[in-house]
Image 1 (cartoon, one colour):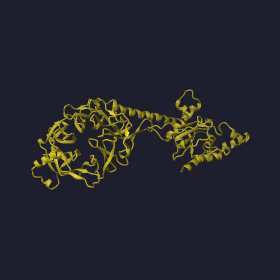
Image 2 (cartoon, one colour; image 1 turned 90 degrees about the vertical axis):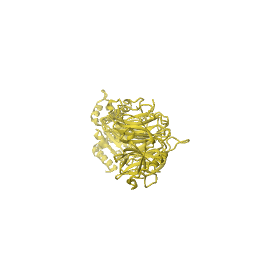
Image 3 (cartoon, one colour; image 1 turned 180 degrees about the vertical axis):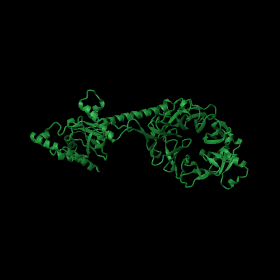
Image 4 (cartoon, one colour; image 1 turned 45 degrees about the vertical axis):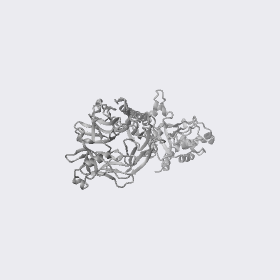
Length: 636
């Protein structure tokens, strides 16, 4: 049924239910002087007004009659032109138009209130309103005007500012109505209320309950937010306490950039409630990119970063993935099946958080395949499974075919990481009995060749779990290696004796053994073992399970995620904490966090003074899980 048809139907109800009233009024008009009485009256006409009777003048496709009746009101509704036409039919002596005509019809049928939808577009001229006609805010969806016995002059009220927790046009109408007297008195429950208020309180109990549920919903969500704040702040036992980079009402990822700022990728968190006693959570589909300037306090206002995708990204399908380079000079954004690599521009005259697109890689990713590690050149290092083979390859902008560095049916490679401009390292495990776990160093300059560091040389480890770069040592490059043994997953620093290119030439020249048949056949890469003269290894941690390690740009320390360690928080169990150790092993490991949360993905600021990380946390008695970003000084 169309809006016009629906409005006509409502007005037919008015016509049929008040025909007797028209006849009676005709007699009264004739007896009192007819037209003179009509144009010189100072009070209401027609049926006595009932404060539970409402006429709604709508402009949208939404309808409110059934909702109002559910709340205890007696309601009719229609569009302004239809109601005005009806007013001229029923009260032909009245020559006014627009809102005055609508108010005449409302008075005639005993409506106490007329609710106008979208009042900013309504002409209230010609209507005497107590205090004058106000200007309307964009969020004021309804203006309610008193009629008949409740007018002269008319009282105009508007809806309260919509709650962020419980909102909707029906609730806007409800709050505008209950701002009128005597409806507002039903909420206050004054023992001196007159009988009409007591009757209303019974009649409109459903509407009153719905109105008070808005405050209940806000209180419920406030309690949820306060519990989350206590979890992230009050219950944190790390010293000094980590600081939040955002609020409870947003989900955050943060990346330390090479220009000293911190990129923040956020989505708004919307809490809602239908009853006031429970709550629901929904994440906004729009990502917003902003940044904290270098040296800014964690609570400082964030600034927009429009150079990155215009400052926002809308989720149109799957959730986008964000990966940064270790030093924060490149960012990978994988969205809608393509990987974009953004380069951070630095130097004199460059604004903070200035990104330019280095290139777009359209090579498809397999299901659950990691988007890879980006480089400022635009290249992406990736690892994947291809049937029975494990492959490490480089994806470049514009290329339809990847650059394969190694392919093997017998070695299972982990995620590769850039350790120098043209060198990558990846953890790997060989199925051959004598090999086991190891670190594999690869280069696009030497495809199908790899340098291998055996896991066993790292204090009898049996497998390698992760590899990362560190600032160069006195003689050559350094690696950070997480290796597992029966004693846990510990962190090692590996110092190489020469730069990678020189070391490669030396090791290959010394490797005079015949190539295995699998290498000759091209089904395996040629693996060159590093002997003890090529490196030294230093143990940095002796307890727990270490991962996600990142070295400070100044080479002072390493920060990492660690689990299965006594953090002093009894209820924490084996939760992930953030740990830090000196890169030169001159001081023992210390925990930067001590809580019952899931802390992960740490990184250093460009000046090596601050550690940024992400915290995954759940809300008590819900299945909600959110991620926020925090920071903590690297040194006490």
